Length: 385
Image (cartoon, rainbow, N blue to C red):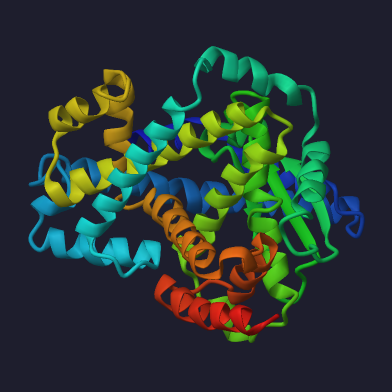
């Protein structure tokens, strides 16, 4: 944290808080040139008088705290850390399963994915990457349109919205995630923005699946569809990360099927992505609930081809933000469980589009609520001719 504070301060006059504010103010046609200049100057004074001193003080205080920490491992080594992690996992995922059950859930999924990947005989990772190059040179707007059109087969008709794709300013690329969807105001869900961080886009396949996660049929579609159901304004106060990010993962994996890839290629890439997420979730549980240290994590991840440097990055990331990957992984696995349960009970009456409509209409809820509501939905489907 001290290093991040110092890096922020060392930007000086080149700090992105200056440049991004000035860029946006200059785009406003409703202001005079003098008003623009005054606002830019006022912002600069606020940064120098308040923001920079706050970072300097934070750095000084943290320097004094160095050496006083009594635990450099997972939450389990704190007093009642294990109990705290149980509550944190429940809060972040929306799942009522115990941590032990979550661990078994991820382990089973990893085994299933490995088996599924082995069944794609004769297809190497190199061939999969080469086959995935079919979407090269497509702009973000073109990919989003492809995803939107492709989603219409298995998802309800999306509501009419406006979407603008923006790119993260170069000065902020190092500090932001690969892409993010800006949640619109509850009284203006027609205006939607997706930001893309070009520095974090490894290849065109990454861009494609990221836009599936953030756009169609992911967060943008999910948010706008639920808002089109005219929910109570109170629902805007309910946030269940497992429901929201679980759907983002579900949409991201579904995106492979919309990319125009060969079926075996899509399957391989999809299973590989899911295994990675499950490994992160299992490592998170290992560090914060089981007490894994770096050596234990390295022994576990080495079996899956992770290098020591990659292991260290994962360890530090999970140590800093416990349960951060859990909503993406457990949320998806809970949705997949609902899907398989619906298929089993409905048999020939199961229609994927109807399931998606049911789930999206719920909006963010804990999975206990989703399971309860789904049973009623299944009974209603069975009564229909």
